[in-house]
Each structure stands twice: as structure tokens, then as C-alpha cells.
Length: 336
Image 1 (cartoon, rainbow, N blue to C red):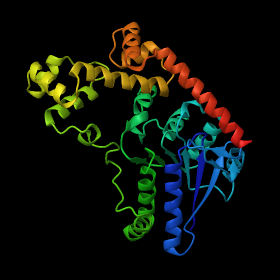
Image 2 (cartoon, rainbow, N blue to C red; image 1 turned 135 degrees about the horizontal axis):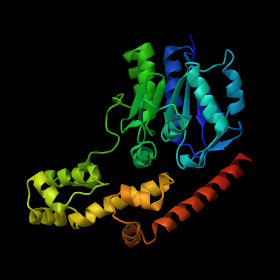
Image 3 (spheres, helix red, strand yellow; image 1 turned 180 degrees about the horizontal axis):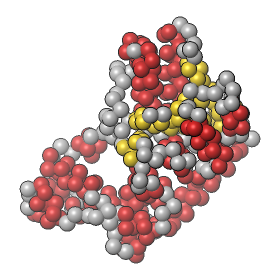
Image 4 (cartoon, rainbow, N blue to C red; image 1 turned 90 degrees about the vertical axis):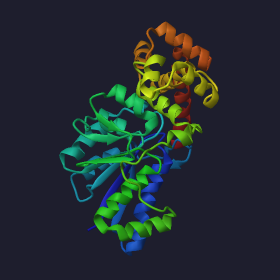
């Protein structure tokens, strides 16, 4: 029995998860010696569509074609929505209706990278666990606080398949292949793809703190973890000191040595970094972004933001909106 996949491409989709998944299926067919997997590529219009890297892909079908295919022999076993940057700009009522039709007919539905946003918007993630890229987690959880989102590599919950993007899509597809054909085939694919193993779905997305920041001091790492876990309601330095068993003076000295700045300054920087992601990933009012990142007022937030990024939150959002419009116009030019 041939298993059929549809890869639905959203403008500015990420190439890496898309191509990794298809290559895994292609190599599986080659190792098996017959066509166990078949796939086609779809987009809204069926016309050429541009990835975030500027490389354009020619789809096989349009959304209208895929909606008709639901009624016949070409109905897919699994549809994977592939998106990337600026996913919040993509809104298509027909697309969301198609996703719900797929769900009602028992088809598998998946998302790669930021595609999880689109499944959430279509109402498919209520009562489900899902995965999304760590960079998009702040905006996602603020927009859909009721959805059980995780920073796992991938999550499979009944007929919903979500991967965080990047090479995590390879892990998810290899997991599906392993379920059908066993570990032997998966190992053969890994050897062909020059990867040494399939990562577990629950493995971390990001590098460990020590590798990411170049810090080895266990106390400093413990403090940073506390800070990152308490952005909306920042802890005082006294609370942090009590939690890690150090004095305020010891923490100040450690931070100067290891981070080159005070703990208060570092705490402010990571709160503002979260704010910058929320400004880019959501339409939350500025005051709500400020509150979500632990600022007592929008004016204090704007003052701190300008000090770090040399522009106000309003200017940041306007600049990003303009940049997205420019990219979209370029993508339209490629499609034409």
C-alpha cells in the first residue's frame, strides 16, 4: 500500500524542514526498492511559491485541487503544512476549511516549523499537545494560552503531527517510517543521510545554556534558568539569592566575572529580548507586551527598549511590518 503525503507550502516557508522530510521519504523508497511513499506539493494558487531563502518551488496542485481530491482516490494519508517566517501574515479561510475537512475525514494533519500557528488558528489543536520552534514559543503561548505547546522536537497527538522545524522534521518523518517498516530501514536512511541517529521527540531544541552562553559556572547557569522562567513577574535579587544559596554581593561579583554586566542588566536584556519576539510574532498591544515581559508601565518599557535597541517598540513593529511587505512584494514578483 502506497502512503500519500501532501506538502502544503505557505509563502516564506523554510526550506530545511521541507526538503529534509521529502529526502527521508525518497531514500526510504530507494532502500525498499519500491514506491512505499508518494508525495505532491501544493500551494494556495498552485503557482510558483517563494521560500524564506528566496528559492522558488513549483507546486503540483492548488488548494482547490486538493479540496476536490478529498472526495476521491487521491485523498492523502497525511498533509504537512510548511511555513516559516511571517506566518502571522497568512490568512486564508478556504485553507482553514480544508484543514477542518481533512480532520473530519480522519486524515493525518501536520505542521513544520511555524505551521503550528496555522493549525491553531483553524481550531485543530484544542485539547492536543503540539510542538513549535523555541523562537516562536513566546508569541504562540501568548496568542493561544489554552493550547498545550511544548518545546519538543516533535509531538504526535492522535492524527495531529507537529514538528519544531529545522532538522526536527527529519526526526519526525523517520519516526513515522520506523513505525511502518522498523528500525532497520531507519538506520539505512540515516546512513545515507549521514546522520548518526533519530533523536527522541522530547529532546531539547536549543543548545544547553552552558554551550549557548559560553558559561560553565553552575551557580550562574542556575540563576539564568530562574530568570528565564520568571519573565512576566521578575524575581528580586534577594529572591534569587535565597533560591541559589548565595549573597547579593556574591551574585553581583559572579555576574561581572562571567557575563560582563550586572545581574539586573542581564535580566532586563532577556526580558526585552522576549518583548522583541512578541512584537515580531504577535499583534498584542504594546501595553500587553510590556506586562507580559514584567514591566510596570508602557512608558518604562518604551524607555528601556529604546535604550537597548535604539528605537521604540512602536517603531520596531512598524519597521518589521514594512520589511514584511517588501519581502511579500518580491515573492509576488518571483511567482509571476
